[in-house]
Length: 185
Image 1 (cartoon, rainbow, N blue to C red):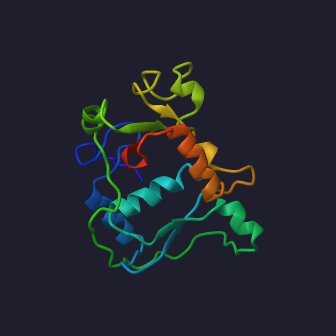
Image 2 (cartoon, rainbow, N blue to C red; image 1 turned 120 degrees about the horizontal axis):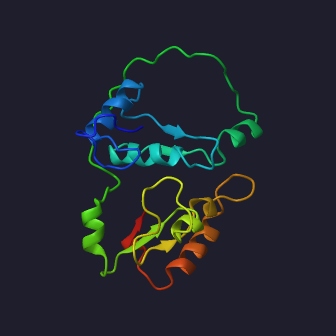
């Protein structure tokens, strides 16, 4: 979900983030009720569904989860699949709630540089190092950022690595830095 109206967008870039109110209105239009559990998935190693997970929490919906292993795991577990069109759901009663996730502006990130703030850049190592840049107009990374490609969170079977392993890997990356001061980019 990206904003087509840059004047109403909460962020810039290739895929501008819509404002919180627009996200909440879209979720309600999709049939979301305030007390519903949402499960998001994709078939690209959580590359895309993680954005929807974050946006729902940013709009204040706490009951949202990522299906570990995505559609492939669902199929492997014997989950049913449908094909063709589905009837549109009636609009839900979801309304904008207090944000459960924070969006930082580039100015806020810049202001935090040099403090206890740590930035983790989730792009591929060659993009982080500035050796190749297929998407952005400028290659490289924010000074001081650490690199941890998002794909490193996924095991070979397409599921997230176990929580204990992820914790150990992030602790090794952060060394003595405060995990509460991490900004993911």
